[in-house]
Image (tube, rainbow, N blue to C red; front, top):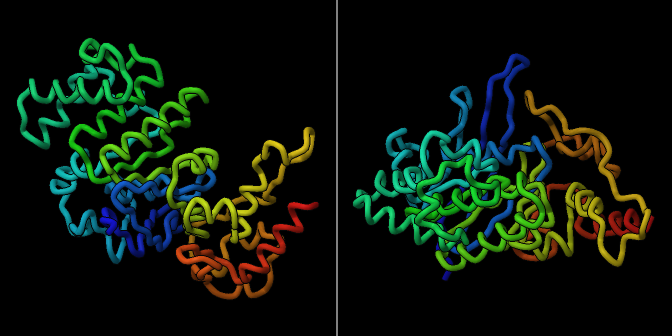
Length: 337
């Protein structure tokens, strides 16, 4: 029986801006089980990072978080004070940020920053914390780990800094790790190493992982389930196999059609594109958020809000007025053109 680590229902974020009220995250519901990887994927500006900050309660001061349910291993997070959330962050839930150079404190050694996290939450001795830091640095593939503890972040390469961030996230043995674009700032070779490392460590520690990315190649390699996000909403969700083999929402289909496929995409052939731009999320938007960019749009798409509906397989849902058969037929015609 699976153990549910995170449960989220009706998560929304509102931010007042000069033009009105911005709604970057709108009524998201999802869960993460122990040992499972949920990938939240979408283009820049769709609300992925704000979703992760909302889970960690690290939103900007002007932002407002709302949720009908937000629970970590059964503990309600919605009513916790800042002190109580601080006791959870870095302890039972940790975050790996996109750019480790801005996440690590340049004024402190790697050892100081690793040791501080464990002593803050577990009250162990400096020696015990140092031993765990060395063990985890070795786990994440850093050689001469004990000597590295004396180094400062600027003395490490980008790949090593990201490995340090992963070790820091694991110091207290968290139930949940949120990784926000953890490989974006790294070159392709290091990206693959970091992804394999995350997957191996997750299996070993049986930690729930939320991977936030815009890279579908990353999603295909490591995700168990996928939530495709567009303009503040989930437009499709399912297992990685369902999303890649039977994409049902026109936006998901458009994303996948933009990717060259070895053996299928002819040399010099034009890649797919999604016309138009992401709509403004200031104020309320009736109907489908993707309507202005969708070539299958009808009057019904703009009339009312569209809820997630079941596709052809259990656990696979999408947000569209078209049936799964209709979207599949449209996608086959578009791919053939």
